[in-house]
Amino acid sequence: MITNLIVKNFLKRLADGFYLAQSFLMPAFPTINPRTATVTDKTSDYTITDEDLETPTIFTNSGSSGTVIFSLPAVADSKNTVVRFSVLADQTIQVDPSGQEKVNYNGDAVAGEDLSLAGTTGNYIELFCDGIQWIVTQANGVVTKAASSSLSPSLSPSLSPSLSPSLSPSLSPSLSPSVSPSVSLSPSISPSVSPT
Image (cartoon, rainbow, N blue to C red; front, side):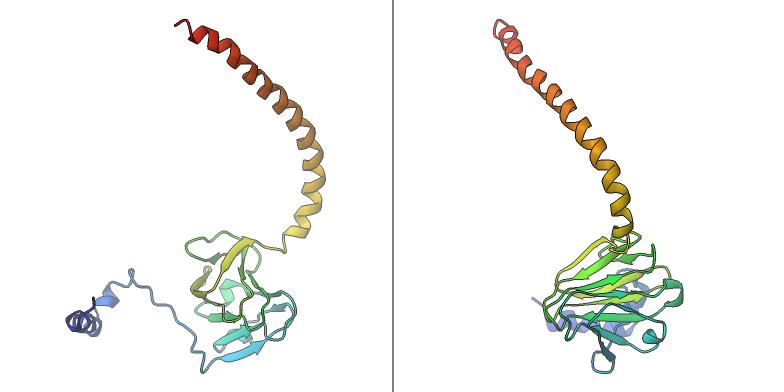
């Protein structure tokens, strides 16, 4: 139970700058004020420009009939910027980093992975760029990470034909004989175990 004394002590420490000295415990990222931000609706894929990020911006998918993919600008050009993506149509929003740059979500910052925000009205994610990577600072709803869709078309044709023929013949013959002898050995082991 929180008492007035606990609140009073917290406010005193806050006023004294205690939490500033302990900033590693509570990182403070800039955030977007939805009341004063520029709201931009997109119904198709869009590449965010540096000019879009000069003022706090909220991108939405209002009116879209399918997944909207937002491509982030390079982190080197976006240091100390904040952007929010908000679902207003029941469609998925996908956020792709530039090239092999990183989007850090809950400590997972794998190069080239994009974010997907579930298509439920009210879901949103907010990202802050520290000049090295994009960091998800706020999220509401289901957010997932996956390999960027921009890599899939180029990898699919080259990997599919070469892996399919070589794996299929080599795996099925080698697994079948190795499993069969191990099963047939169990009857020969049981007579040697019973006399002992």
